[in-house]
View 1 (cartoon, rainbow, N blue to C red):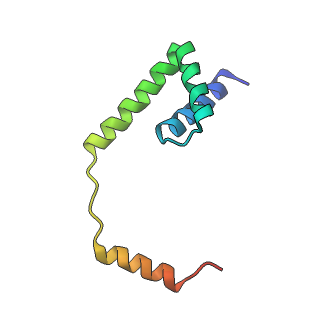
View 2: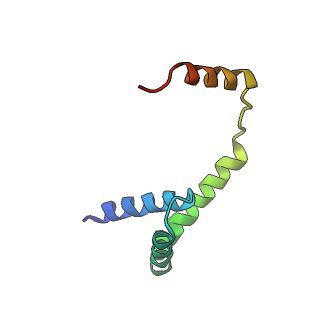
Length: 81
């Protein structure tokens, strides 16, 4: 496996970690890997920073109750086959 493949796999784990999608065992393994590799730790910090930046800068628009009801009605009238 190439270094870029390793890094790509690592970043996938970072995204899962930040989304709280890792099991406890996977999380422990990732944290151990971060302790041993300062480059990976810096990548995690950069991703966390970027996510915080987006959260603070982007404004979420309110969804109208009418739109929500319309979507629910369409889901009910078109059940999965």
